[in-house]
Image (tube, rainbow, N blue to C red; front, side):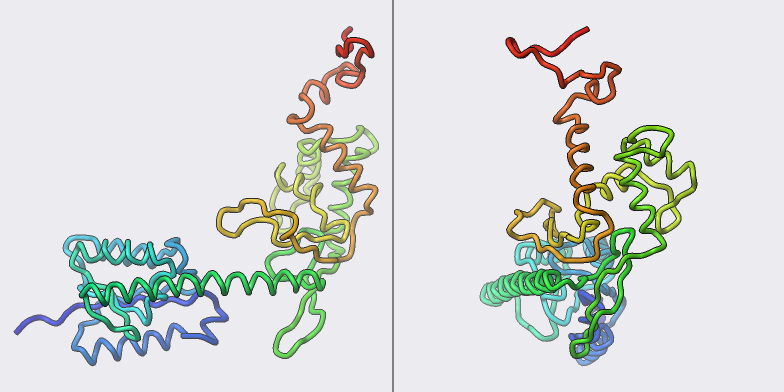
Amino acid sequence: MTAPLRAALYLRVSTARQAEHDISIPDQKRQGEAWCAARGYELVETFIEAGASATNDRRPEFQRMIEAGISKPAPFDVVVVHSFSRFFRDHFELEFNVRKLAKNGVKLVSITQEMGDDPMHVMMRQIMALFDEYQSKENAKHVLRAMNENARQGFWNGALPPIGYRIVAAEQRGAKIKKKLEIDPLHADTVRLIFRLFLEGDGVKGPMGVKAITCYLNERRLFTRDGGRWGLAQIHAILTRTTYIGEHRFNTRSHKDREKKPESEVAIMACPPLIDRDTFEAVQARLKSRDPRMTPARVTSGPTLLTGICFCAKCGGAMTL
């Protein structure tokens, strides 16, 4: 009598909302276990991926399952999924990983899309993977379009707000509670202080640079929102964030590669201003003048007052002592 085939279940949902409204993890598990039992498969392991996209392989349980599947000897003979889209929503990556497992004698099977190994069924699986990939990209476009419109209407799309703001419920639309930003009195003064230090200084020293402001706050134990120490990047981000003049910029970078998007794709969300526009623009002008890509460091930090400012009207040469 031959031993039963050993099966591993791979279960995945993209988000907590999908877990509630789509094919939940318990439902996938129940169907997978029943499918294995009906075929006499021995279920040896279950890999559960909650809240992970199938458009890439940055999934801990997926990586663990693949590593196990290509090890010798493999601890299971088949990987069972609810549908191929649970495994991968990229047709190239799907085939790449299917073949990687197959080289070690491990087969991928779907309980809702059963098919064989002949060329016709392989082609059908590839076509389904192409449709899954297309649908995933279309869904992402629709979701992003809705989020952009939500931002344009002045509503917060989620994530942690910039320091100096907090999230509040604004209105209810059906089952959804729309949220907006309001000024957080606990941290708003810290933001105003950073702008003031950059333009005016602390009354003892003149205008401060980003590094001096960072040291000033840390030395006086004026910590970040989560109680940590300030870093240069955080201070620079605050000084350049348009949210503080009431214009929060949403959808500025690509989710996949973090590349900057064109201005035509950026959505502006109105919110209560923390800093007046004149102050903000003065800060941007000073930052630009201190940018080493625009002005050498010796010009802004050198001892000569008119360095980089005073030039000869005839030859254009810089003033020298």
